[in-house]
Image (cartoon, rainbow, N blue to C red; front, side):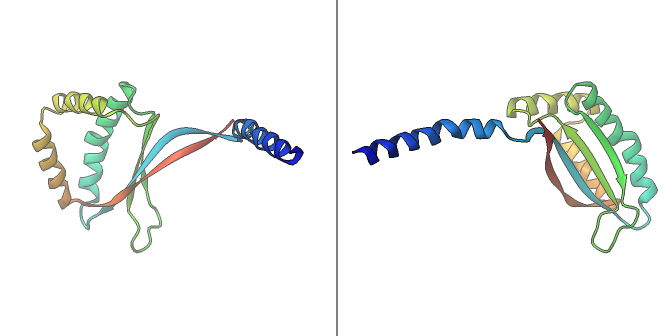
Length: 145
């Protein structure tokens, strides 16, 4: 009987100790980062960079002014090896917005750009003459506690 009581007490102590261990973590979850990997097609670097410097940066600056983004960057892969992107577009944001918030923001961007979702999709497709999207990576920053 004594062994059973000690076992129950020991198990109960583990349940109490578990939350304390979790609170002792050396890190906390921070902002999200997306890194979009872009392969610029031959002869299109100046055209694509003009788009990025005018339109893409303008949209990112607007999103930052709305509090939707924390920061954004255009990186040049100076020593790109075969199969690596030429350009990396970084955006940093606090967390995922809700579906309703995404829809609200889409309407604001459509009004700002004076185009609906169909026109935005067509414009993105037209940029295919300048670049190939190689995909994107989503990161979560880990911060010290």
